[in-house]
Length: 159
Image 1 (cartoon, helix red, strand yellow):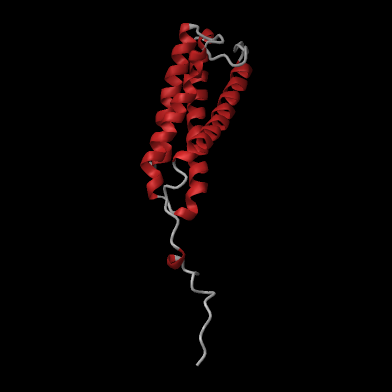
Image 2 (cartoon, rainbow, N blue to C red):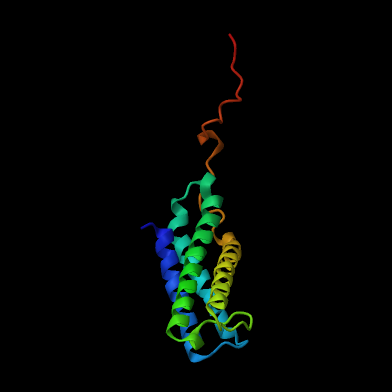
């Protein structure tokens, strides 16, 4: 299993456990404590970037940076959605509430699951752009002489 999937699973499990604890305790309101899930996601992304950015090629950096954030947050969102469905099946009052939408049917649970996944992906991508300035110069830009096409435009001296 590659590091993107591992990180997505770890972040997803941590976010799911946190959201499940909030849901089971009945803490749904406007308390800022429920936004800690985004900090968990951001810290997970930072740890992932810290370990992997130095191994990326300069020309592939931006695609890998954004792509890895999208994949990690998609996996984490899917795990949070699965956890929400399991919570609803075990005890309907334990399901996660989103935007004052309480799950009263399986259709509403699926709607909340979709909202969780979209929210995690969007906020994962936003987090990656917030984190980006910390890593933007990590892969060194190759020197012009090291580029394979650097000598293509030099004039050839004729004798």
